[in-house]
Length: 116
Image (tube, rainbow, N blue to C red; front, side):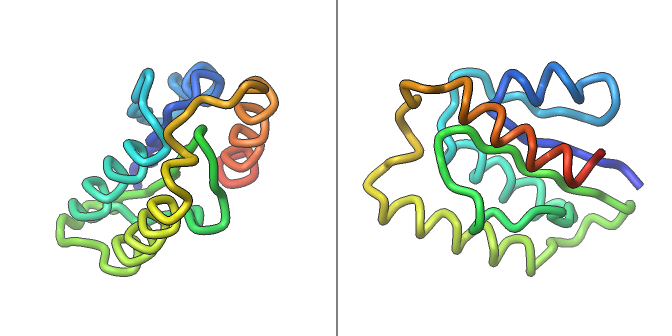
């Protein structure tokens, strides 16, 4: 089983880059992370985190792949739902927050709960 994290959070990248495959999207928005996550799901990646629950500029999505390459429909559906919610927020996930360190830590905590 291969674990993958798609993130725009440098703290998640720093903490997990030596333990799992990290796709770090530097200077990318939360929407960019969701779009990349959709690509991973279309290649058979199963989501370990519900992206609809966690909103904001800093996003990290944890996936696992068990060798199959057909699209993971449940993950794609959740990502599409999250993309719709983000679009309705008028791009709230496209601007870096003033208190970025706090939001980076919050995002990192979500990944720590999933990956340890």
